[in-house]
Image (cartoon, rainbow, N blue to C red; front, side, top):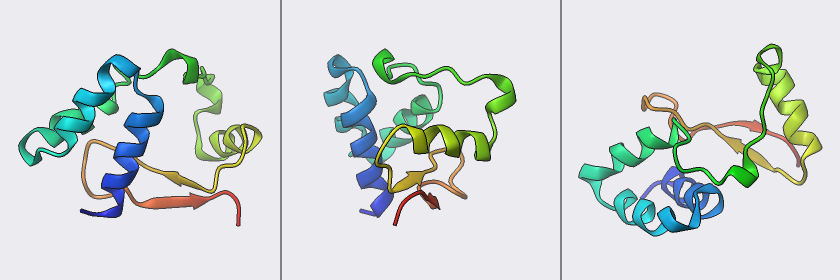
Length: 97
């Protein structure tokens, strides 16, 4: 298992609504179904609303999102999750040493 699998599990455990977490985690372990779950994460279908923060369209760019994330706390690394695999799970920003 690669490091991004760990990040996907952490994402589900932290931000998916509790009643869906076990099913998502179960499907992440099945290679044939994993793609379905990672695709659904891109649509925020079952994210816990406590963690959803609206971002104005004019602020939906990397520098503005970085600024917002930095104000939210002790983030060390930002992981990029996307539907296509070419950048899936790559660390692309380090916010703190």
